[in-house]
Length: 633
Ligand code: GDP
Image (spheres, rainbow, N blue to C red):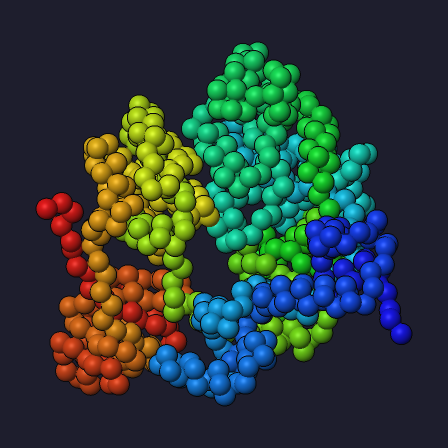
């Protein structure tokens, strides 16, 4: 017997929206009225063939995948896959992990596009998106120093008498929730754009709304502008609080004028930016501020599903003498319960106890709730994501996979855009070069910004995401990292710590004295003609297998040279868990008791580092030299 199928049923089977399927059917010239209409057998067959094929062009693969698993996904025999890898000179076994770049390349060879599924989402079907409910906004306060960020945070916290339960003493756990009649608002305790962008650089989004505090007397100051740039880059909406409104010389209208010049036009001036007047000291305007935040949150339609397993971010962590590792976890989705198994960073733990910001024990934490959690395996880093899984077994399994992925990452340091290889990025499809300008005077910032933004070569546009006066700061590096930008220092230098940080994170800082040179370099870079200022040449790699303390000499590392060679005169970089802890010179290089000039791979040696004593077993020492390249001929 012939059969018929309703369009919506077929759409479900083909995993496509009913409306889209209906359109496709109409395009084929078959008349149907709605997605409740039926189509008969032959048409169903045709449609299945047509769209199944389309579907199979993309496969989802987990972040951690072995050769065997990949072969299954691709529908090829594992031995064939191993053989074809061998032809490319890659020796792999069935149970070996392939990194994602390689997996993508292999899949491409079989005409598949790849969609990467984060480990925590593997096999997880979020059935009930419908069950999502509005969640409170998470707010970060930013602004210039002394404009009243801390006072405002405290004033709002004090105002929140509703949630102070008997015996509860306010604790600083990294964030707190304020309850109002209209709803709840969560404030992060660390004000400022640096912490905000540092989180973003780690790939997590915590803040929904930024409150920009501006002193009603001082008005917009350099850090106000910085904060605006950081919030805009992150595409987080800004609500402005003009603070210290109690002072007789307060001039909110002047502040609004300054804001308008920066593209933030206040609502009462016909713009879109919510601006409220506050006094943290006299407790004026706080309710209004909270109300406006809730209004903004409503517009953002922030939602989460309290019925799923919890996930979120660690926002603060420490080692407590009595309780062991303690962290404040911000639940972003789902509900966290006592007894839940979770993975944070690369480790796993079990929620043994939870406390709110008043020190009260709680048994569950719903979306947008910060809780202090006990039961962690170690102290996580702020910004480490966490997620709950269904069992201890699964938590353990994921944690091991994450550790393996992390180790793989260590070997390949993250690639950030650099002027030296701009050409390559462009050929890979980059369309926009983001730049941060730091200069000695405001005039130079503007002149540079203007010349750069006019510039366009081969479809590459330049976007100055922030320009400011002064040396390159920690905040600039974080912004560059989070936004994949390069930093131009014009007549300014950064201190050595900032330089070291930038180097270790792969952020490119360029120094110039003449605007013409900046433009010339970028021009050359876009067409691949810019010579690097200096080139690093890798010489080898050694692993620390032992450490010795020798009086008068200091710590000496017993090393095994794994690759290449170690030269007495070379530079070294000491890495632990992928992080650079030291970069500098070799103080001593010995084979047994003798000083030597070089040690080759496969041999053991003793290495002492100049001015660094904290070597530990398991550290990796990378050996390299730097070759200077003349900038202009
Ligand atoms: P932050 O650096 O932005 O965190 O600023 P603080 O919150 O530490 O405040 C800096 C100074 O401004 C302190 O001396 C506060 O007492 C003062 N201050 C903060 N808010 C107000 C306010 O609303 N009115 C007045 N008159 N002073 C304030």
